[in-house]
Image: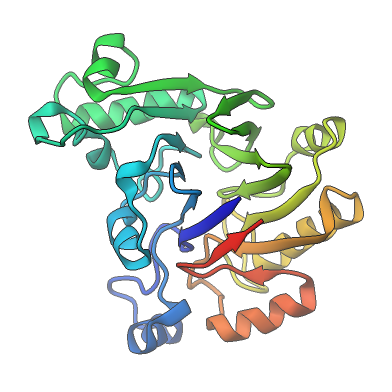
Length: 284
């Protein structure tokens, strides 16, 4: 399984447009791993997690041919994770030539909110009607917590997130070729039902990527800090949910309380995780 981090930032990216804090100034000055686009992941060359606003810039920077995408796992509909403007260009009116059929997986609530965003781009557009699905050359798979679906040669399982219950926000497990990857952004502490699902179904992950929006010692709403992410990772290792040789990454990183990338890596080595960066590619 090939995994490419197209973006590793929280909603505001890094640097923020108007921010003059030391972290943002460093990102402007040096670029590199301190420069972060909004979070998104490509698996192989045809499965995307989150159709976010930075997709095209990331794809160009890292040599990803996004015209090959066949499957979309949408964690939720917040604007840093879903850009309806990308999806609406699948209409013939935009002269997109021969788009591949697209299968979209998300919770029913997320699909409904995605559909609302689509209607703001194109009057009357909806993801929920067969005629519009035909025009957009796509199909939808509403998934609840614990539901699994086969997409090509992969099996995908949805896991509930407590980031925004009103939006039905979700996390995803992707299994391929005997390997398993857990993508867990955006989220606070994993729910009891999530832990139960891992144990009941015997999941053992080869790699995980977990939300760490806030830096060490920092706190905020709806997300994990680096300290909390480290504690969730340690529990996964202790309970055998993350394999002994499995790799753990933090992602969805803000400038809030977060040190520069190199310093955050040092903190991560002490706490048992690695720090994802834009363009990082894993081979599982």
